[in-house]
Amino acid sequence: MQSGDATRLSDDAPVDAQSYARAILNILADSADEKTQLSETQRAVLNILEDSAEEKLLVGGTQRAVLNILEDVAGEQARLEATQKAVLNILDDSAEETARLAGTQRAVLNILDDFGAEKTKVEQANFALQQANAGATAANRELEAFSYSVAHDLRSPLRSIDGFSLALLEDCADQLDEEGRVYLRYVRESAQQMAKLIDDLLSLSRVSRTELRQSPIDLASIARTVLAHLQRNQPGRTVELVIGGNMPADGDADLMRIVLENLLGNAWKFTGKCSHARIEFGEMAQAGGTAYFIRDNGAGFDMAYADKLFGVFQRLHGVSEFEGTGIGLSIVQRIIRRHGGRVWAEGEVGRGAAFYFTLEEGI
Image (cartoon, rainbow, N blue to C red):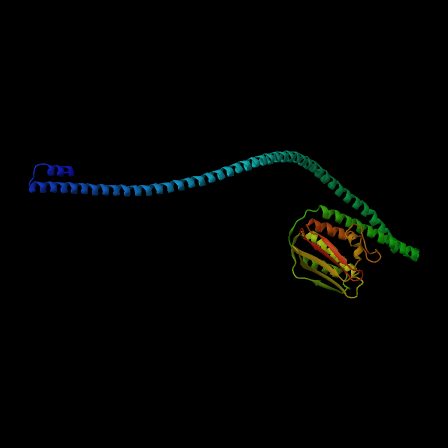
């Protein structure tokens, strides 16, 4: 009941207390209901406010998430731009590489063209070389036949000159004065020297054409055999011979015997005037291999003329001092070169000489 109702009660006829009390109770009951409704309204408002606060928090989180997403998008966009630039750079580099590759391909094609032309030239040169080799082989055969023919034809008159000169000295000595006998001896010596020269020239020709047959050999053993032969031919000489232990090598046994015959023979010859002759054959280590040497204390030679030692007919001593044709060292050099080695000499006048040789390339 509202306040207007109470006023009406007072203005109307008198009401009993009981009715008035019920009216009051109704009013209070209505007031309690209103209060209850108000409390519920308040609680509803509070709930709404709480929901609004949560929504606000959610909105704030959403905004932050959106901002983070926007920042990530910006970063991704920057990375995308960097990637695009990198791709563009790669494409530029690829274009340059393509251009370079095209240039390289052209260069290769040019090289192949040049190679084809060079190959043709080489084939032509090989054909010409084969023809030249065939011609050289034929010429060598002809030269060999000519050499033996000339040697035989020259030997025959030389033998006649030497034989008849000897016959004159033996059978007609009493009819010749001393000067005539000396002249005949000169004739014989010249004929013998000429025969030796022919033999040496033939030897030089043979060592250039002989097939090289390499096998394991012992140079020390070959040297002992050569020196023993020299001692048998001149038993009256006393020479100190020094030969190292075994000297294994890879070479042609026959050709290496000729090398040692010439080198040891020279050492034997040029120590002929020494009161205490000494000849040594040994080996020594060299960069990349072994070098062999024949050393003596004989006449020696002037190093100013060392480059002439291995030339054909080159002599540093007169025939009157030491016999020989000047071909022996040429034969030695040719054999050593065929073995892939080299030969050289050192000496001093009056203090002996040393000859060195190798049998390997590059030593």
